[in-house]
Each structure stands twice: as structure tokens, then as C-alpha cells.
Length: 196
Figure 1 (cartoon, rainbow, N blue to C red):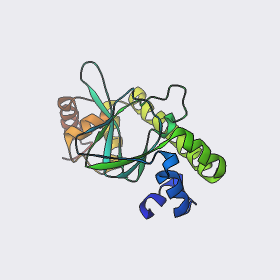
Figure 2: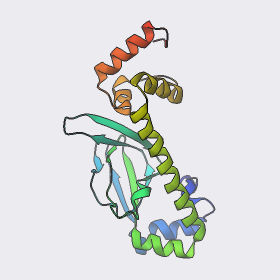
Figure 3: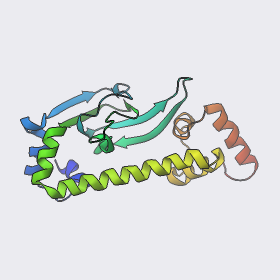
């Protein structure tokens, strides 16, 4: 419970309130375990409530018909999956969610969530802030792809992560084929923009 209470959405909530939200029979209390490599949610699946990642890491990615895959985000526990889509008119997962490690997720049904928010306004305020922050994050991410060149995205990736540890993972994150990333890195090294 201590680990979950660190999540911003649960700020200023007691352990008793957390149990009421996450584990009561009214909240559905669906706890599911996934193995590394499992597909947790598929793009287009209905978002039926609040999904709380309590253990492990998941990768959120989008794929094209041509097979190109872009990693939108890695989420480590504790974390929330698709909170901005809980109450959306089109409340479907916008990404595929894959288990990067063994993980566990608790799902709280939408109707219980609404009841809980009416009694606990601090939780409602926390959730609205989380949703607003997600919109801001996704807007910036979209801007990166729409405006910045590959080399600019690589520099930003290095600035945020310190370096590129794994070219396959970096290529998924940057939305390019691995050979394209390798070529761009070689050019950047040649031009003195970075060191291998």
C-alpha cells in the first residue's frame, strides 16, 4: 500500500481509502498478473475504468500496417494506464500495452470510480490533474514527431536518457527503423555531434 500511496493520483489519501477504492467488491478489485511479453491491452480495447500498474513495467506502443512500431512510453510501477480515456466518449486504448517484465494490474470499474470521486473530492482533483498532465505529455510527444528532425529527436532522447543503451529500444521510441537510427548516429558522430 505504501508504494501505491506515492502515486500522485492517491496523494492525501489514507490506506483505508485506498483499500476502499482498489480492493472493495464494489470496485471490481480485478487483480491480474501478466508475464513478460504478454499483450496486456490491445489498441482499440475498451477502457472500462482505472488501470493501476502495481508491479513491473509495461511498454505502450503504436504500430502501422507496414509493421512500423513506435514506443510511446514505458510505464514503471506504480503507474496508471490510459487515465485520459476513462471518461472519453471514444474510451478505447490508443496504444498496445505490452508487459516488459512480469507485472500486476488492478482495474477499478468506472461506476465505482464515479461514486468514490463524489465522496472524495481530493481524489477527483488528483485524477483531473493526472489527465491534464497526460494531455500535455502527449501533445509534446506529437510535436516531437511532427516538427523535429530525426537528429533533433536523437539529441533529445540522449538528453533525457543520458545515452543510447539499446539501439532497438531507442529506434522503437524514436519511431524509426534501426538501420536509419544507425546511419543517423554514424553521421552525428562524424559531424562531432556525439561520441559513441
